[in-house]
Image (cartoon, rainbow, N blue to C red):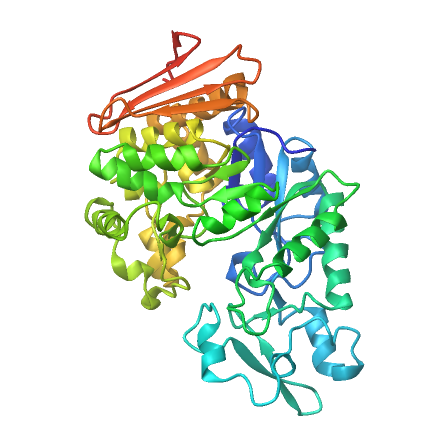
Length: 481
């Protein structure tokens, strides 16, 4: 199925029920009409990182189901699957073959060798300092072959996630085969996870390396020719990076909106929000929440540094059960620029503020993505957090099917589902249409969406201070209750 301009739900295969069949049941029985697309977070056999350390893309982890379950969902919803273009698990058969057979392995060129990457007498400390890295040390790991010899492999992320060498023919074939396989199993979109880290180049910071990053994106795009699948490069960083990708015609993420909107709801002023929405491309997916924390660095230069600090401090003050330590090394936080919380709890578990945040998301440029915990206005899961000591698990509650049935009866959730149905059906949200944003006063914002044919006009009037709002379509008031 081709991508559609409808709300996309982000969920793990086992977060609404225990498997993909349960997920299908929940969608059909409790979320009908509110969800048009589905980002199923990694469902492949994996050795960690909640699926983001895949061992293979050839099969579905049997605890979730099989390809028939994936195809059943992709026949009814446009779907997005993940492809980790930067790395692959050490538990994969590819890696095991490499360790066993070393230079005789057909996969010897799959992984990026740290030692061979550098010229003689390098890397220097200056080289290592230049790298944009996720660790406080050089990003490599020493591996041992079956014959007892050792070498070093690039290792940007977790212990199990070894970096691929995207320059070699072996890796290019690996990428193409897997992208085509995912498209053939129904992917409308393929999310290139950790995309900006994939290209490494001497004398660069190894993050979003130009022009090579564009060559990689073009190759991946060419791999998908003849299929319905499109690429969505994932970049959690300063907005200049997704804006560059957008200029090349691809869909991008808006990871800045969550912090910008929190700032606006915390201080009751509309200017920063209006400025950001005016800049944003229409060919994007908006987020307020994902499986990761709230991105702070994504909002840099949209909000001033003191405004980001104010938002962060206020979040820890007014957010429900949000503590700084949950985003620290004590709780295995990988990224110091993310805050671990549900969006509902970031707004103090306040139904009205939360609904307003989703109203703004619906009227923003692009297609809304709603994380499953956010769809159910979920509170911070402190029990799961403390059981696992994993910071991001505060926003990764496991819902039983019966629990979903109860949650959708809550007034805030029922109202949100009606809002999402409205977004899916209303032609005013045409991506080829227009958007007009004004700020009648310091606290007010008006967003007007009109379709290309100019037959449907939706208007949101919102006061961020008093929290009064109205929605009209072609002059008629819309009620979401």
